Length: 357
Image (cartoon, rainbow, N blue to C red):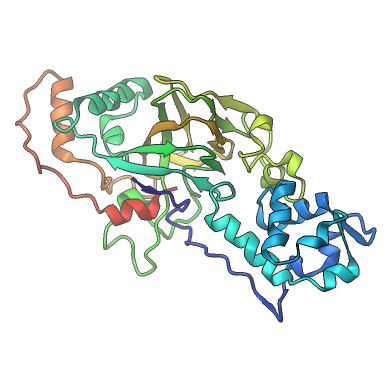
C-alpha cells in the first residue's frame, strides 16, 4: 500500500512554501491586523486558532498553538495567553507560516487526507468474489455492462487513528472541454499539456470492517437547497467548518457509520438531458471521511467512469474487452472463448496514481 495524494487530473501537486523578507511573512500572517479580528490591539488564543484556519484551513488546538511558539523559540510569549503589538513585532511570522505549512503537508492530523491504499484488478479469472460484486453493481444500477466494466480498478483504503479525508468531490468539472477524461486517456488524446479530467459518474463504497469509533462517511451538503463553497469552509470560523471533517463531522448534514458488509452508492454527476450522457458535476455529492478515533477502518471504492456527450466513443482504458465479452456471453446464456492470464489490456499505473483523488 502507498500513501494517499489528494490530487486530480486537472490539479497540480501543490507544495506550499512560505515567502517573506527578513523573517516576516508577506502574506496575511505577516500583519497584526489580520490576526486581530476584533481590532482591540491584542491577539487572543482564539484569534491565533482563527488565523491558522483562515490562512491554511487547519484547525489547531490550544496545545498545538503552544507547540508552535515553542518550535520558533518563543514559548514565553503566551504566558498571559495574549500577544500585543510590541510582542508581535518581535516575532518571525515567516517562521510561523513555515511551521503551519509543514503541518498541512506532513502532519497526519492536519493533512487534507491521511490514509494508505492499493489498487486491485477485478477480472473474473483473478478474483471471482470481486468480480461478482461488479456484476451485482450492473444489476443494481441498470447501467450497461460496458460502462461498469470500464470503471477503475478496485481501490482498497486503510485508515488508522486520525485517518480522515476532508470534504471533496470524486469527480472534476465538466467545463474543460479542451481536455479528455482520464479514463479515455491515451498518448494521443492527452495532447501537449498532459492534462485530463476525472470523469467518475458514480461511487460505490464498501465497508470492510467495523470501526471502533469514528470513521463516518459524511455528506456536508446533503439536502441543501443551494451550494456555496464559502458555506462549507467558513474560513476563520472553526465552529462552522464543514470541510474539515476532523472537527466538522458532527455538523455534516448526513453521516454514514462504517459497518462491515454495508455499502453506499452515490452519483457524482447529473445526466445530460440533451444527449443522455454524463452531465454537470453534482456539487451536493461533496463528501469525506471523518477522523478514525479508535481502531482502524478498511473500505473499498469502485469508481464507475462514464463519458460526456462530446466523446462517447473512445473506450475506457480500464475496460478489459475479453473479460467484458465473456461476462456478456454468460449473461445471455452463450459460451465465450476461455480466458487465460495476460489477456486484455495493460494498465498504466502512473496514469492511475496521477488521477487519484
